[in-house]
Length: 526
Image (cartoon, rainbow, N blue to C red):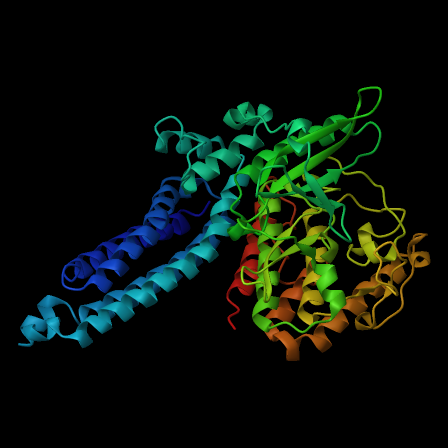
């Protein structure tokens, strides 16, 4: 750990806190003079309280972070301080001291003065909210630290423990709750039961969601729409799958759907065969309030209805956040494709609303041995890295394989055209390559080990991205897609790190992902 980096982080944190105090002191003078300024001041306090809590905690543990994580935090803190310095400079022009010294004390009461203050506060609040979106991913990466210092600091900071059931959990309580699930036995979260009973589904209206294994559930006497997703497993894998499902369910209980593009988990439902052996498990997810029936992203792509670039970017950003959170929790998804992205109608019903990644049918803990099972279905292999394609899998599954799948999905979202086509409107029909794909593909291509041919498919997808994406979604989006699909290439400058990308905590991969994928796509504005 570089002492210079740590000192720089601490200095930037302390400087930022002082600048915000100065801003608040300046604005406090005007609170009673103008109601709109008072409202903005209250909003500023609300936004800053979370950030200040995170920064003070970061200052406390900064000398225990990895170099990659510290450098990432340093870059973000420099950006934050720059925004605050700019805000201070603007507000100083209308401060009481400056006005009096210029003999213009009376101007403080004029509307144009207040307008300057309001505009400055609006810009600062928007800047802080945008900065928080960039900071949160690196903040949650600290969850992966194996150092016990983090746990001790969390407990010390919260005087021996936080109320994990609090209705308004702060950033530290969320981190503590998720950290607890990473420990053997689940820590404090181990006492939280996620098992649900079958009686709650009596009389429920259940509707299958086309092109996915999930279904919607509307229980008798309830207006809350639930999503159920079936998890199956190979014989002999039940103990490990059961443990992984339970742990992921606890992590998804603490997820913020709006932030991470994942549905909160209400619990799990176990199914047993006639011999009373565990045969399957279902995740039961909550949905946004007043939700209507969702459809998969595949269904929307197949309709070929044009959508705005705003919607394209929103779906892409939510998907990137979803993958980041899953990896932060120590899991790999293994099944990222449009069939496993649910899109809910907007509240108005006139356009597409929020989207969420599901499809945890093949997920597993990133630290445990993966199975080497595969299949020859071309429409699934299309989204898999060449190392994981076909009936005969060559490599164990790692986080970069998810990142590759993400890249293929982002390519398809950017083009807004389906790579998989159904000749008839029936998801049980045999799929064929869509015209947007630009090349032929069939199950026979994946029935044997043909690594050369599988690499050619990847190369064709990369070429498609470079040719078709720039005029549609711009160079930055294109670079993100290409970087994801080439993340395991030896000449990939973005993801290449000292000693490779395999590290004990998985933090190096996470930092690279946040810096070059998540941050880049968040910064794209329409």
